[in-house]
Structures are given as C-alpha cells and as structure tokens.
Image (cartoon, rainbow, N blue to C red; front, side, top):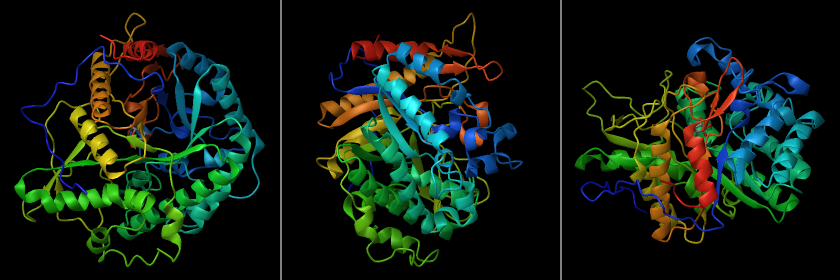
Length: 479
Ligand code: FCB
C-alpha cells in the first residue's frame, strides 16, 4: 500500500482542458441528501433525527440554522424534478431519511415516508434520470441515539431492518444503492470532535461507532443482495488525500491515513482492521467491540466504490511545544476527530481556497483515483460527490459563479486524466444540485449548481449549472 502520496510540483498540469470526452456510458449527474434539502421535518409522521436535535441546540450550527425548512424539497418535489430534467441530469443521488421510514428507528414502516421516495423515484424514471439511493446520510433516528446511537451495536442491526423495508419498497425501480455516506464523518465528527450530530466528544465512542457503521454496511449489503439481487451495491467514503509537510512527516501521514481511510477500506474491501490502527489507538480503546464473525460480515463484494473528494490534507509531527494548528478542515467543537493521534498537527495548505477554507487541489483527485484503482483491482469507482462552496449572488436573474465552474472543470479534467491512465471510473456526481443546509455551517455556505433563495424558495440555475448541462449534453468538457 502506498502511504505517502506524491505531490505534483513543476510538472503539475493545470487541469483546465476543454473538449475532453467521456465515454457514452459514463454517468454524469448531481447529488443531495435528505436532511440538507427536504425540510418538512414533522410532516406525515416523520420522527426526529439527531440532526433535528443537534441543530436546535444553541451554538452547534452557524446562525442557529436548522433543517426544519431547508429547500422545502419535500413539498416542491415535482418542480425540483423538472429542474433536474432541465439540467439534463443522467443520474440523481439522493438519500432516504430513516426517521421518515421508521420514526423511532425500528418497527413498522411509516407508509407516507415510503410514498414520498416512491414518488421521487417514479418522477426520476419518468424523466429518464437514473436514481441512486443512499440509505444513510447522517440523519439517525433520535430514539436510537438515546439508546447509544452508533456506539451501540444494536443500531447496526436496526439499520439492516430499515434497509430491508426500503429495499422491498423501492428495489423494483432503484438499480443502484449506496449503504452509507461518509461513515468517517458519522463516527469521528459525530462522536469524536463533536462538530456533527450527536455532538459527542469521546475518542473511544468514535472508534466503536466506526466499527458499528462498518457492521451496518456489511449487514445492509447482505440485505440488498437478498432483496434486490440484480442491484448494484456500493458505499460512499470520503477519502483524505494526506500529504506530509516535510521529510519527517511520514508517521503523521500513516496515522491519519489509517484513521481516515484504511479504517473503512481495509475491513470493507479487504477484511480486517489495519494492525497499525489498532496499535495507534490502543490507549483509547481495547477494540472489544469487534466480535467474532464481524469481519466476515463487513467484507462484502461491492459493485463499485463511491468516492467523495473536495480537497487534500497536510500533516506533520507536532513538537508538543509550539501552538498547535487545527487546520483539518472541520470545525473544532472541543473534542478530537483523531483519537490516538494527538502527536499530529494539521497544517494549513496553500490556496486557492473555497469559501469553506478548503484548498483547491484537483491533482489530489487524480492521485486518489489512481491509488484506489491500484489497491482495488477490478473494483470500478464512481465520484459520488465533488463540488465547491463560493459566495454567490443573483444579479439580473443570473448567478455568475465562474469560480465554481472553474473548480468543476479542473476536477472533471483530473478525473479524465485518471481514466486515461486506466482507472475504471463509471460516473461523476456533482455536489450539489441545490444550495442547502451545510451541516454545522447551516445556510452560510452554498454548494449548489442551482441557487436557492431561502426567503422565497425560488431556484435559479447558476452559470455552473448551465456548464454542467452542456457537459452532459456533449459528454465532453465544455469551453
Ligand atoms: C460531504 C457531505 C455532504 C456535503 C459535502 C459538502 O462531506 O457528504 O453532505 O455536506 O460534504
């Protein structure tokens, strides 16, 4: 396994090529997630999720924003489907809200919840847009959190039950499934740093959550195989492209790579946890949460691997004396997202940056795709999220977001380069279709290729959205 990734310097391509073509069967679309767009959080029997609770807790989300209304997508479904058709999306990746399907996380199905996603799926198919369903994008039913959430093994079993209900209801029409979105965030930001719901700050809890999310994934893959045997099944991971700040950073890179990446890829794709991860975290947990048989459950064949990529990460060994940087790209809410790696310092990287403060590094995407491809021969890849937040405004009915278009152009170019080097990349979904509730940042960060006016709910296709539409139409990177 390659631990240290090469940094392009003099020979770095500028990633601004236009005219590059994608194969006819390469799927280009956009992604969203339930809590970020739906609103209607108390409608039609939906139960509370950990994000309802967290966002209602003072100080947790910028401006005290919550997902109560969001983009009101729940009530504007038809118009939003028409918008997707106008952009020409070939695929739409959405997530299903567990508390809409099972308000308390177990037991009988709430039919109104199923009906909503059924209408969404039918509306997509009627418009020739391929549905890609994610079972879990962070909105755990609050009742399950009250019983320990992802630190409780039982939650993984509940997830399998929920997956079965959804697969039975939608499996006749949804051919592509993702179990979990970015379980690293659920475990390490949710239970470690505390910057995401449920906001706990306990390294041992984060590691237990990591394992139970892995287990939930494996159990859900089994359920999907059984209920929808012809489906394509995947998981979406957020990979950290970790770069060393200097020659002495090798151990820091290895530690963060283990916690951020191999903590999920190793058990899911290869079986077992990395020995160095277990060693690094020995003072935090004894790993007794791994029971006999778990590794076999987690290690399931997948049809493709979903890759979310936004920027790179730079680390070095902390000398223990100088003020420590915390530039890991996530709000620090008192705890640490990196249990057992207190000796690592996250170093602010060179710009340019997006309005998240994330550095723009398309070469990181190319390297990541090459690495994943080399490490997992025969496993196709798909980019399930990539995009950027910038400050947008509507002027004369237009949003001139050149920076976002430039970001997308560079990253599509990077993906194309990786494909030319043999990477089996099947598709690319832009984050996000709509401006939406950006978790701890509330509505203060806009990732959409469609602008949303939160006062009127009016949608305006941004220039970047028009660019994506041209990209899809030509299947080539536009001028
Ligand atoms: C990813 C999340 C997605 C969105 C983007 C910006 O980590 O999966 O919901 O917030 O970041």
